[in-house]
Amino acid sequence: MTNDYYNRKYAEGDFHYNPEYERTWLQNHLVDRFDMKPGDRVLDLGCGKGLHASLLADLGFRVFGVEKTVEGVKGAKQRGSAAEFIQASAADLATYFDESYFDLIFCRGMSWFHRELHVVCPVTGVNVSEKVPELFRFIKPGGLFVLQISTDFSGNHPERDTHNRRLSEFVRLFELHGEIVHKSNWNGVEVYSNEQAADVKGNLVIATRK
Ligand SMILES: C[S@@+](CC[C@H](N)C(=O)[O-])C[C@H]1O[C@@H](n2cnc3c(N)ncnc32)[C@H](O)[C@@H]1O
Image (cartoon, rainbow, N blue to C red; front, top):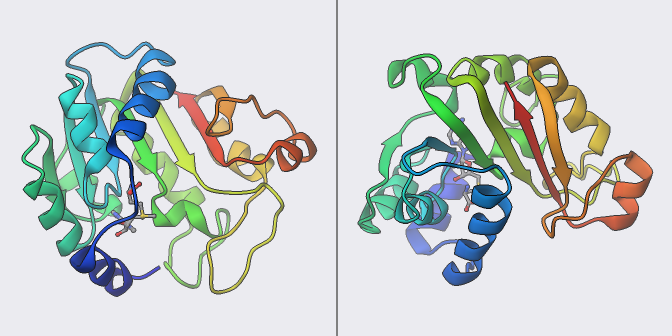
């Protein structure tokens, strides 16, 4: 999806979220699961209109949201949370942050991870597998990269829509950069093979410790 698409979407509204549901999900599936500590530095990468970044700031973390679209950042700032929002591309983190700055990078549905992962994507122009090592530079040794991404694990990839990448494609993306410490669907059911994940479905949370 392009900047234009998200600028229009955010000018008119947002994804349909129940903030209380999202807060509980973050508490259970991020904060408690990964034993996050108050004051941990968190980057929400591709934060959209900043709901999750703001909820994490309310939970006591030092949160930065990076988002490419003007409308996304405008909406995020209007939430009035303690999270700091920056309009920038994930490709330009070095302009804003020192290396090893973050305890956690949380990446929730950022567009790069919705399409081709290991070759140049014709829509975004990005080879994600070449970008991931650059993102890991900004995580402390021992810190985490947590990707939350929609997929039914089938390998289906409609040309004009988000792709359903297989579990092994995400594993291949992260295994070179640390230890993969968690793989589950969004309900917390562990996923461990392409076949089992495609059976269980329910999207992916994959966490890698640097
Ligand atoms: C599916 S939305 C998810 C937004 C938000 N994380 C959420 O869960 O509601 C994908 C987001 O990634 C953003 N995005 C795409 N490419 C980006 C890039 N290179 N750098 C930063 N954000 C980007 C889009 O503008 C969009 O807001």
